[in-house]
Length: 113
Image 1 (tube, helix red, strand yellow):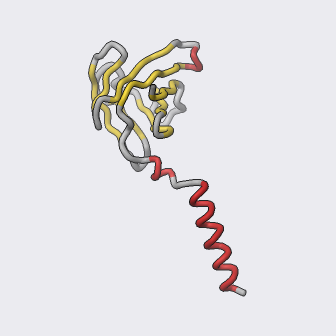
Image 2 (image 1 turned 45 degrees about the vertical axis):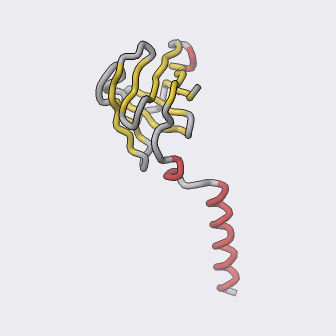
């Protein structure tokens, strides 16, 4: 009886893992390219950011900067350039969120175009 319960629990665990992958599976580098960002649900306008390398970006005017990205937590910290002092989080393979506070809610959402 215990053996059957263990087998059932293992099967359920494997099924759930297939449906809900671990957050670390979202890790990996940020996808390079141009992101179109919407701030405050569109009220604050549109912004652009281009992820140009594993630690480099440029704003919509081409002004460069650097960022640090932790693939384990999916957290981004903009270290220099026009977005210096802001933070972000990788929300998916083609989406990042940006906020002015470390750990804050992303009030700017950027989609890879």
